[in-house]
Length: 409
Picture 1 (cartoon, rainbow, N blue to C red):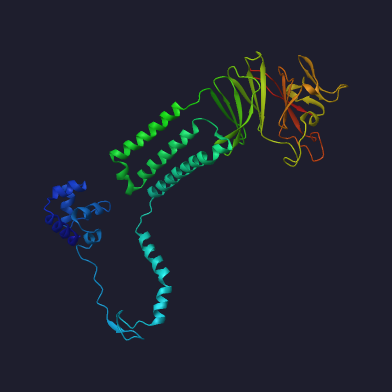
Picture 2 (spheres, rainbow, N blue to C red; picture 1 turned 90 degrees about the horizontal axis):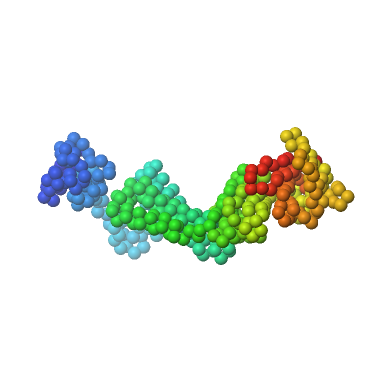
């Protein structure tokens, strides 16, 4: 410490600086500089690079008190084995030895960079910074892919705010990553860097507000978190249903046959069936669209089937809905007969509208009921009806709250 202190004092005086001037440049106190020069302490690791830069010396020279590494002794001269010429190698250079050195060159390079890497201090801040930079890189890659490929495939973000949220994550990752890494923090805290980050962030928010398409966007997550229902209604009441693609994207799957007047009632009847009920100014009636995401085949997508055939037979409500009965295809004229505490209702097979392979809505005009195959239903290969043990969900169509009824065969 004494040698280091004397060296710092010597170099400071050569620069014509006082202890106070040196302390101000380093951002420390006069007392700290005095302790260094009197051998009572050493500069902190974080101060050494700045100290070396100020004094015009290397960190190694500061720590060694000005001593430079001993220079290698002049190499002895010798004669090569074949030509007899002098070579500054310290010993005779033999052809096979030179070839061996060439073979070991990759190891020399490996050892060189390994020593370099050892000097890099891996700390939690650096790890966190790298992770934030990876987050920014992923956001940038996602946006580039969407612009170059995604839109050409007809993919859209499930919600209009999502691309701007991705931009925000990109800016946040760059800024936070730089703040976590000590070597970059001083540059990130400069006025220009702070101003640039603030301008980018505010511009992104402004663009999100300016380019918002208007209308309504509805996202609903299924109870089992397996599916996302996406519905977009523009200012004219045109409603478009989207099928999810990946995590953030969707493609246009269907357009409602009637315009939407106000709110849309969203009700998940099973984990993969979502009923969308709405009022339309076109006819003043209540309509329903059913989004389905699953299948009840024993082997998925093995064959297409009709829900009307799958529910053939007589069905009874559970203990809490004992007054409900449903018969499908068993009446003299076929069709569906529903018995409720309020009375009986009959619907012909052609009055039923099927959605996917899971739901029936009837009647088509001014629908009253929605019938769904529950997730415990199985249609075995070669069969057309639900196997024993499967249950159905029957739900009345309406804008008010409606409680589903569970039916068993």
